[in-house]
Image 1: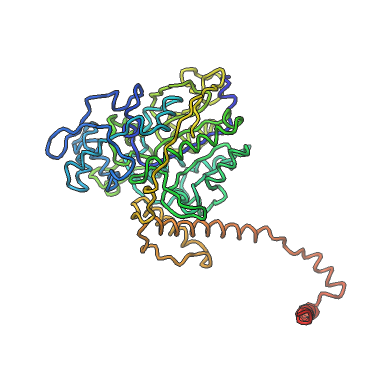
Image 2: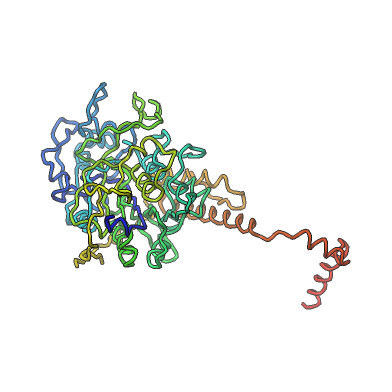
Amino acid sequence: MPPGLDALRHIVVLMMENRSFDHMLGSVPGIGGIDDAGGFSNPDTTGASANPQPLAAFQGQLQPDPDHHFPAVDLQIFGGNTAPGREANMQGFVKSYYNQQQNVGHSREILYYFKQSDLPVLTTLAQEFAVLNRWFASIPGPTICNRAFAHYGTSFGRVDMNLVYINEPFKSIYDRMINATPKHTSKLYYYDTASSTMEITNLLQNQPQLFGTYDQFLSDCQNGTLPDYSFVEPNYSDHDTDTGEEVANDQHPDHNIQAGEAFIASVYTAIKGNADLWASTVLLIVYDEHGGIFDHVPPPPCTPDQFTASANDTGTTQPFAFDRLGVRVPAILVSPWIPKGKVVSRVFDHASIPATVTKWFLGDYSPRSPRETSADVFIEPNVAPVDPARNLLSLDVMRTDCPDFE
Amino acid sequence: MTVIKVPQPPPSAYDPNRPVSSLLKMQLEHLFEAEKRLPSRYRSEVYVNAIKTEGEASNYIRKVTEAIHQAHGDAERARRKPKRRRGIEIAAMADGGGTKTGKKKSIKQKISGKKKQS
């Protein structure tokens, strides 16, 4: 068996907020970003062509928060075409942002992206490990329903921000883990109690023992007590604590991008700081959805879920069968067993998270949603024969040249 | 080994008076729903609709999150509290010291004993 898979004991997922692939990684050469694509533009509302530019700011630029609810994302992806048989063309980002302020110049800023030097943490990790450059949000819609796919493999038919997931047919990945035979361990680490958890309040309400704080994550890394599967949440708000001021580090507009960079580095450093843990852990850094910000790659169709959102729920004139993915988001897989500079162009979405964790730790498991069972996995099950073309932890010897952050 | 410098956000990045985003509003709503299911003694007295800033939101979120943990912790402790073993109780009563009257007396004695001490 590949030694990287033999060594693997822990999967950690860090899910950030509301930035698209091109916005964050578009300037990194050779990974399928906007600088590689060239020639992409959007019409503004005067009919003039607006081009992507590397002028994104750390804070203060994306005000108001770009609309990323279902109807707005439909406009962004299809450019306003509602005809049957329409094709995704990614031509509606500027039009959509114009709708919020009726300011043509301001609307063109939705095509701004970061220079590589602006984001030393994310771009370094993308170049040092594996960038999964066709990871799409699970739904062309907002945060809550997208995050649901990461926890349940489905949003149970929802395309909005509402949340009441009780007595649903599919268990959360955490329930699956802790109730498995033999038992597995799993924890959700929110930043602190003042930031708490997003989307899975129902789990917090009924199973608070599943949750810990980021401080506990740090000490679990240090002490070698990290569970088999961990999901890490960033800080969603600026707030005071007993020890000082906490700056939001989720990177949700209009929160500071550099605070998120520092947080990503902190998670990486905590894992790498324990040699045993570093050798036996895979870290996935991924964003929940694009936040209304441009990307040039049309989301592909996908296996329909067993749920359908009504036209009333979608806010468009059409129902939605969960048969198309959302906009592309940054996704980076980190492990010392991954060769430097790996680019993976298979299609993933957030349903790939419970799909991978389930297959790796539990093997066959049912019931799972149609979307999850059809989602690709980013870690191959360690069952012979392992396909070397799909195995990302493919090195025979663990790397010792991985970067450090300070 | 490459060492990458991580720039820190400027102090001006911190603004707890920033208006709550639609995302935080939803988080507040979700936690408010969770809070309504808590026994009344664990509920905050915060009027959620009056929350306007991130600082105010995080204060409420902290209260509800801690209350949820507290309520579950208390319930768990109550479940684990050793139950009185009826067999031993009956045996104690058979020894003659377990009548209701005797128990009351002993409590009174304890109280009077404390008074004496003070």
